[in-house]
Amino acid sequence: MKALALFDFDGTISDRDSMIDFIRFAFGGRRFLIGVCRLSGVIAKYALRLTSDTQAKRRVLTRFFGGYDYDRLLEIADRYAAERIGKIIRPKALEKIEWHLSEGHEIAVVSASVEIWLQKWCKDLGLTLIATKPEIINNRFTGALSSPNCKGEEKIRRIKEIYDLSKFETIYAYGDSPPDRPMLALAQHSFYKPFE
Image (cartoon, rainbow, N blue to C red; front, side, top):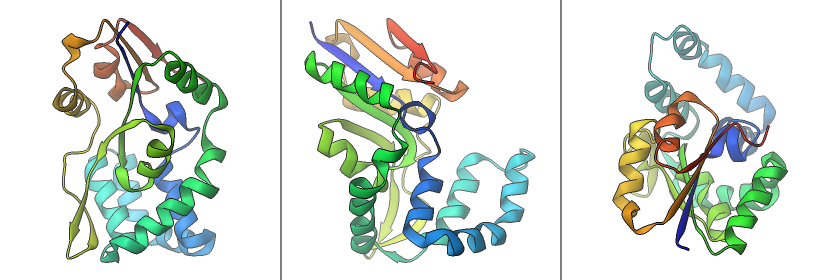
């Protein structure tokens, strides 16, 4: 049976926001806290819904990584995959991924996170990654995004760019927040907050 399993990452596979976790890993606790303090206005606007999550994400990424050498950033991301990311993965989520792999199912991680810090982990497990794309100019990460934030209906658009869903007899989907509901609606077997 040809099957596709779609997994959200942050809060579904992981037990926390991977962007914040990656920034803390890259810069250490002290520099992270200083950066967060300087972003307090952006954070307050986001909390009050005066700015979108996409705008807030760009401001955070630009503050920490604007102009950062892309090759150096990928080295940090590889270290993050080797040393840290396993510590934020929910054991039951990993068990479910391993079950789908053992059944020969196609698996895609569909995430609003920027692909930089998830791509090595996904590649090592043999998973397809569909995520928000970073803007890279002259081999430097600008902090901006080169694709729409991969959440809500954008997840559907990106999934359909890669997969002809009519070719799958069964689709599974796993998510943990309201923006995951359009993706969950694609599946015959959908699971909301299944690993908590």
